[in-house]
Length: 636
Image 1 (spheres, rainbow, N blue to C red):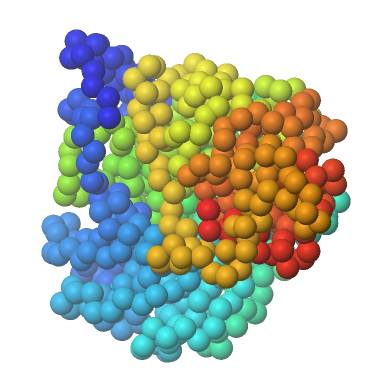
Image 2: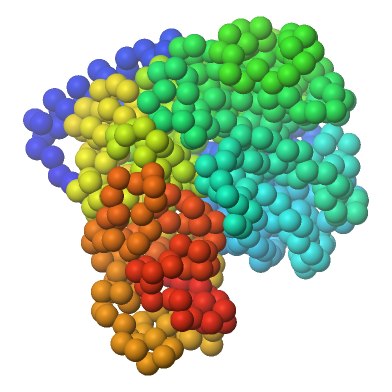
């Protein structure tokens, strides 16, 4: 962490505070930190979800950074107890009788089982790769766990934790919602579905997503609700009568140049409505209106009387209140999606309520009169009166009150306040500080040329230069002037804010590699793949020049020599054949592959896009050898 001279620090903080407290497009006044930012790393609560006990007496708060569940008195908001769980918990749910709380620990690949009477963890069950939410059927037979990396829903015996089967879900399966009667489970996913292998259009097709619908009694998928042109689907809410469903999502405009940001053509923030109230086909409706955007919708809640629908927006730091009667009237009058109409939301949005930094999960009190919103980067819970649609209270959680450099950098990463009209933030394309699975036409290189795949941010601090063409020598260049000019369309970062943002991005550590063994030992197939990766001669005994060996370009701990090379992958849309060698950290997660995302699988990099053997000598490999190479690459 860096040290600053006190005089310069004070002046810079005053400048940062002046910029940070300026009223953005929402009309919200943002409070600067009460104390100067500290260079010391601090552990915050980082609440992501809230949940009421079955009797309404307790409010459970899932705290992601501190790795715990905090239990509050629902009347006084005082802390009753704290339960330590696993690393980076992302979702939780109660058993039907309220006696057990299940917590999905995404970086531990486990579920913590908490006894709600003693507030003790009574069991820890292993599950799939990166569990992100849990739900139990009303009969108490099954526990369903959505796994973000293995793209599935694990079905466990709810009594013993033994896994019974897996159900296919969308890519990045993350959030689950039970219907009010408990008969159906709705599962969303945060990354778009990959195109079919060999697809002619491949990476330049509109993204596709879906909501998987599971019959909880039989533990089978009974429907998949299509979500066209959607990438990034988060929470779903179902009305008490079961007739209306709403999914919070992002509608990216990645097939056109990002130059159209000022026309609202980067992302549209939308809901997809479905159910009997809507008709046989889902309808997508916008939350945005001109100069008033709802960046990155996340949490959704529908009041018990179905009069109001609420949506949290991470980037805009607001909760959008919708009149359901007017919403349904608008949908029925138009009879189709109106996602491109920035005047549509004025027909049904009745309030935009300012809350804290990075609002996530939203939970209604049992009587529907209060909405509780978890502000992840403020360590607060906003309480909204649903009768007045006004902020009634803000519940501070115990923890550090100082704002660390890392925390401020993270707030900067997740907010949309710096971009033109508050439309987007870094986290739009780097969901949860990772990636989005999309390819983009970024106009600094020219319209319709140099189509690029979005890369993972974890572990990038020492792998410059940056961009696929290596044009940016360091992260401050990548995230500073370039981002302001071509993404934000505004000059917004002062030096201190940019420095803190860079410190945060450099702090991002790779998540656990699920393809490695616990002791990092290689399997027989992985050992064979490693030999191919490092080989100096091909299957016919011919020497492979050093510069054409896999291990030359992808050397070092992060799998890159950081050089600019021509590996024969130039496309008609590319201005140059020269590309920077990408790192291999967690490469198994990063489909689609290649600089333009044209390879939906690792295998296609060499079977389709390496005819001249310039991207490593691979045309002599047998199918089994290629499989072994891929097995090894997944462990990097």
